Image 1 (cartoon, one colour):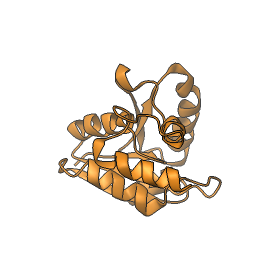
Image 2 (cartoon, helix red, strand yellow; image 1 turned 90 degrees about the vertical axis):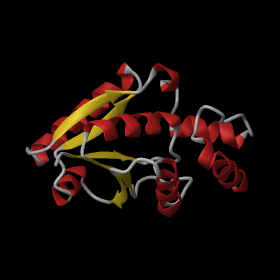
Image 3 (cartoon, helix red, strand yellow; image 1 turned 180 degrees about the vertical axis):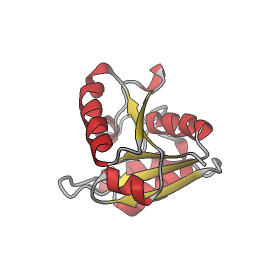
Length: 160
C-alpha cells in the first residue's frame, strides 16, 4: 500500500488545496492530509476547525485520512509509514523553499520521497492568506474556497 502525506496549515483550505488533494488521492492508496500545528504562527482557524473543513470537503473521497501533527514532518511520515510527501507548487517562487524542505526531510527520513504537484492554472493565485484578506473585506470567495465551507470562513473572519 502506497501512503502519501500532504502537509499544510490549511488556514483555511482553498480550492488550490482541494485540487492537489483530489489529484493525489487518485495516485496513492491512502492520502493523509496532515494539518500542521505551528507554534510560531497564530492561525485564524483552530486546528479543529481546519480539520473539520477538510473532512467536509473531502467526504466523498474514500482513501483520505484527516489528521494533525506537531514537530518534524520526517518523524510524522515515519509514524504513519508514509512513502511520499506531497507538496503543492503554485509558482516557481514556491520551489526554492519547498526544495530545501524536501532535502531536509530526505536527510531526516531517507525512506520518504517528496513529490511536487503543481496546482491547476485556475488556482495558481490562491493562498490561504489571500482568502483571509478577501473575506476580511467581505469580498466574493466564490471559486476560491469550496462552497461547503465558504459561509463558515466569512463568519469566523468577520468575528475577528
